Length: 262
Image (tube, rainbow, N blue to C red; front, top):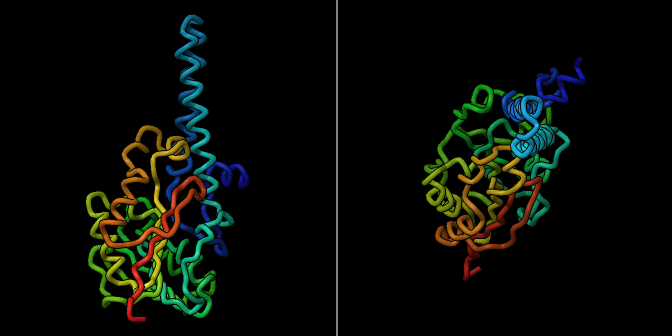
C-alpha cells in the first residue's frame, strides 16, 4: 500500500525526507483524467462500434494524460535533477539569489554548488499550490540538508526586491517567472538591477511543448514561447549566453554586461 501511494503521488514525506509541498492534484489530477478518458472510450465503443474514431481519440487523450502523470511524478522525485549544467556561478563563493524559492528545491541545489558562498532565498510565500506557501517547508528542507546556516530567507516581491544595486554575483529562478503574467519584463529588469556586472541569471520556465501538453493539455498554449522570452530578456538589457531543454522544461542563461572599466 505504501508503495502504491508513492507511485500515484499520495504518500506524504516521512520525518527524514524532503517535502516540497506539491499538492496531490499535481500528480493525481492527470491520472484521474486519464482513467476518465479511457472509461469513456470503452463505454462509447461498447455502446456503438461505429463510434470507433471518437473512441480512438479518447484513448489518445487518455495516453496523453497518463504521460503527464508520469512526468509529474518524475518531477516530484527528490533524485530528479533540479537545474541544468550551465556556467552560472563565477566562483564557489558567489552570493546567489534564488528568486521565487518556494519550498527550497532550487535553493538546496544552489547551496550545494556554491559551497563557500551564500544563497539568499526570496519568495512572497503565498503560492496556493504549495502547502502553507512554502516557508515552513523551506526551513524544514534546509535543516534536513544541513544548509540552513548558508541560506538567508527573505520574504519579498520579485518586482520590488529589498536589495541594493549590484548585490549578487549570480541568480536563478525556476518555474516562477512563467506565473508573473504581464510583470515578466519588470521582474527581469529587477534581476538585472541586483546583479553585479558580469553576473549571470539562470531562468527555467514552462513553454508550449509536448511535455507541457501532456501535463496541462490545452492550457500549455497560454505559456510564453521561446521567442517571447528571448525578446523580453533583450528588452530588459540582459545578454543571451545559452539556452536549451531540461527535464521537458526550457532554460535561458542570461548575463548582465561586464563593467567596461574592469
